[in-house]
Amino acid sequence: MTAAAVASDTSGRRVEFFHPFFATLMIIRALLLSLLLTSCANNYLVGFGGDTNYLSFDHPNSEEAVADVRAAANKLCRQRKELAIETESTCSLTRCATNYQCQERSDAGN
Image (tube, rainbow, N blue to C red; front, top):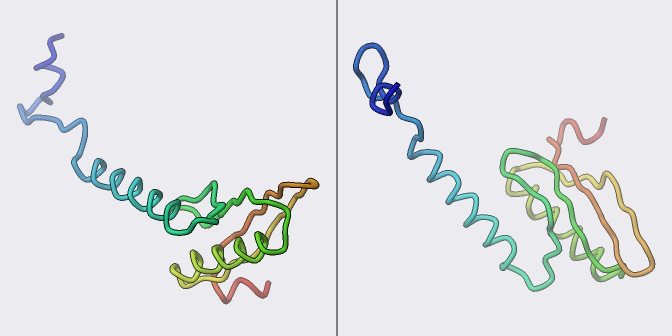
C-alpha cells in the first residue's frame, strides 16, 4: 500500500494525522512551564500539568523554603479558583519533597 493510499480514506478525502491545534497546545504548555520555572528565583516546582490538580515541589529543608513552596502552591491553585491542600511532605536533613492538591472550595472541607 502506498503512502498516498494510506493518507486518503475511501471517499478520497485526505486524512489529517496531526492537527495544528495539538502543536499550538504543546507550545503553550512549554511556554507556561518556562514562565513558571523562571518567574521566581526560589521556585522549587518539579511537577505540574495544566490538566491535573497535583503539584510537586523539591526544596531545601528550611522554614523559608517551606513558606515559599506554600505560597507558590496557593498562587497556582488560586489561578484555578481552588484551594491548595498539602497532601504529603517527606524530608531528609537537607531536602524536602512536598505535594499539594488543588481542590474546589466545597470539597476542601471533606
